Length: 229
Image 1 (cartoon, rainbow, N blue to C red):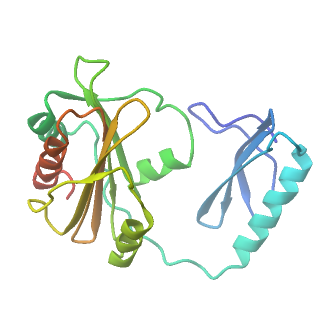
Image 2 (image 1 turned 120 degrees about the vertical axis):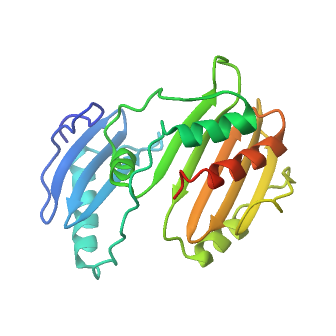
């Protein structure tokens, strides 16, 4: 399958009929590959369940089947990406700091070359990690943004996510359609705020925030800052 694409540049993978291989690896029962088919980037990953295994060739044949089927599908409607949002922009940092206390970018583990990184670099999705400044045991969160979202998709997401131990928060101060839930995890608490406004979906998902209401306030400040656009 070639070398693993885990550095700053993709490693070569196996060739595919109808697709251009970007990277690939197969080790320890886990195989993955990246393939361009026309203007689409396919990421395929498979892992054995411990009771059975597969060879490099069987994974290659599996991926070839996906490439062939994808190439036969009707061409998707192109999505115009948003201008890339800078995670280091002072507007988002100041908004989070005003709501939660001093914030900083969390840059750990962001060097891997993968599909998500390509989406970030092209503006198709925004995902920015932040953490409490100067406190390694403080809160941490992700601010994610999707553009051109169908309201039906947002409604489906809300219906499909069940939070039996969650507590709903007041979101009357947020624009558009919004929800906010705080719930316990194994060793912390998770608070998630989702807002759909003007076709843009903003989600802030945080761990370890002492006052969940403060995250809702921070979300309002992030949206009002002009950073989302």
